Each structure stands twice: as C-alpha cells, then as structure tokens.
Length: 166
Ligand SMILES: CC(C)(COP(=O)(O)OP(=O)(O)OC[C@H]1O[C@@H](n2cnc3c(N)ncnc32)[C@H](O)[C@@H]1OP(=O)(O)O)[C@@H](O)C(=O)NCCC(=O)NCCS
Image (cartoon, rainbow, N blue to C red; front, side):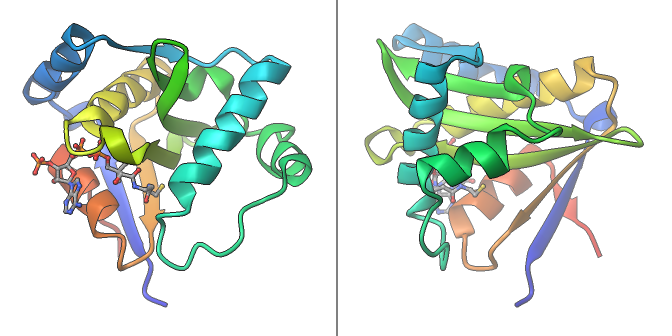
C-alpha cells in the first residue's frame, strides 16, 4: 500500500487564510476546547473517534473501549491538551488529536467530523487550533499519514499546506 505521508512546516504556516473558518464556526454556535482527561471525556472521545473512523477506507474493525484506552490513551505520547474537540452544545461533533515526539516533531493522529457537520470548514478550524498547539509547544514539523483513497482528509491537509514526504 502506498500510504500518503504528509508534512506541514509549522513555522511557515500562515494562519490568516484559515481564521475565517474558525470565526464562522464560533458564530454558528460551535465551540472548541482542548480535552480534559476524565472518564466521561475518554468515553466521548472514543465514541467520536470510532464513528468518524468508520469512514476511513479499509480502516477495519475499531478498537474495543478497553483496547482504545490501553493503546491510545494510557501511552506516553497521549497529550490531552493536544486533542482539540468541537462541540455543538454538549455533543462532541469533531476532533483533531495531535501527539508530540522527539526532535521537534508532532503527529496528527486523527481528525474527524461527524457526517452531518461536514463540508462547512470545521476540520480546517480544528486543524488551525491543532497547529497553534504544535507551534506553542515549539515543534516545527507536523506529520500525518493517510490511506491513498482518503481523498477528503488528503485534500484537507493539502489545503492547509501539507506537502508529500518521500
Ligand atoms: C476529513 C474530514 C475530517 C473533513 O472534515 P470537514 O469538516 O468535512 O472538512 P472541511 O469542510 O473543513 O473541508 C476542508 C477541505 O477539505 C477538503 N475536503 C473536505 N471534504 C472533501 C471531500 N469529500 N472530497 C474532497 N475534498 C474534501 C477540501 O479541500 C476542503 O476545502 P474547500 O471546502 O475549501 O475545498 C471528514 O471528512 C471526516 O471526518 N472523515 C472521516 C475521518 C477521516 O478520514 N479522518 C482522517 C483520517 S485521520
């Protein structure tokens, strides 16, 4: 499989173009927050991640809740303040999760928006906040990897300025 490996130069990222997506979301009543690590929030994150992941080509069966906690949350790279959540009222409707790694490298683990909320720039607003987080942590590079048929995710990242890694 030729996975699509993408990288953003965070120092060169110009956020002005993407600010309006965030403002429009906020005006429409969607709000954004970094995750706090509580049992209820772990469960909400799991449900959202599972629902959105069902649309990743060839994703296969998702983790059980127990294995999600063991393999994605209770691991050294888990960074709750790097998980930006979008909410409509109390409902978690979008997420962008970033983990931090040595040598100034960050990894975009998962960005997802529930189907009824897609196509209105919410992933760009989420990613803008994720990129600000990465920059504030002093990381220069934000990497991600996608299934070659995941057109929406690949296009979204290219739109933000991600370029192909060899
Ligand atoms: C990928 C995903 C997060 C995009 O969310 P979204 O909020 O609908 O995306 P946006 O409305 O912010 O669109 C941003 C850009 O992405 C691209 N894009 C979004 N949906 C697209 C689609 N169906 N086809 C092609 N490009 C698409 C476009 O470039 C778009 O910019 P434009 O509208 O100015 O052309 C969403 O489709 C999703 O949750 N998919 C399932 C989970 C997934 O595959 N996540 C990535 C793996 S980590």
